[in-house]
Image 1: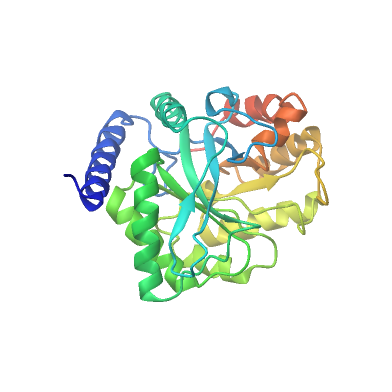
Image 2: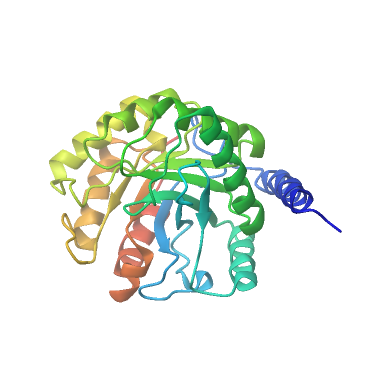
Amino acid sequence: MVTSAAVVLALVVATVCWYGSAGRKNGGGGPPSGSVSSSLPPRVVSGYWQAWGNPRIELHEVPAQYNLIFAAFAVADGAGTGRVRFDQEVQPRASFIADVDALQRAGRRVSLSVGGAEDGGIEITSRAQVKAFLASVGEIIGLYHFTGVDWDLEHGIDRRSIADVSRQLKAQYGPQFLITMAPMQNQPDYEDLAVEIQDIIDMVNPQFYNGGQPNRRYILDEARRWAAKVGADRVGMGFMTVQADQATGVLPPSEVAATWRDVVRLLPRARGLMTWSINLDSTSGYRFASTCGPLVRGGPVAD
């Protein structure tokens, strides 16, 4: 009889092997000078994929303009142990895993986003909780073949614990494993965290919605400020372009595109854009993807 521990170990070993081969396949080109050794493309169009649907979109249906997809969300198991779980209700497990693999073979990354507005009360503060989180997220990564973790902790963070977890994940899975974050406005702990892990962070996408300010001058100032903290080639920007219940700070894709043009004039190595969410974008006929995707991914990148 094979024990559950043996199964988990096998999944982790298989995933580490997969990362090694993925890193070798990604040779040539590389990220912009001065960035961490990551497999992110020079320009990124990213979005959150809602694991509960609303509306229902299978991963293989996500438009090709999205080259980084955040699977939302891993949430607390409810026991306060630090363990998290990821439940998706959109497609059969085997189909979902096959889609993750197919996307990543095509050079489109799929990361696990941790947290969200309803995170189940995630607590990652004590050593025991750090250990429990790493064990549980390792099981999720091993099962679903995610190649990164995105921090979207909206109810406070323990900077030192999250920094510790981020470094352990990068050490375990290698430099190709993505560490990203989507800080809300007025979260100084996130800024301190970004500075602390500046040497391993791949992309920071400040949220300019739901409490953020969609004023273009403010966005440009924030992009400049984040660039000073983590480097311009790790700076992204997060937007909502479709109105949802109680959402604030919604901008049309045309305004997002205009803002991006201003940002790259200011920061020629800026990394890209993020939207909440891919599912919402689908309700507009994917206007964010079709408007911003070619602009961001097709533009020149400074050396």
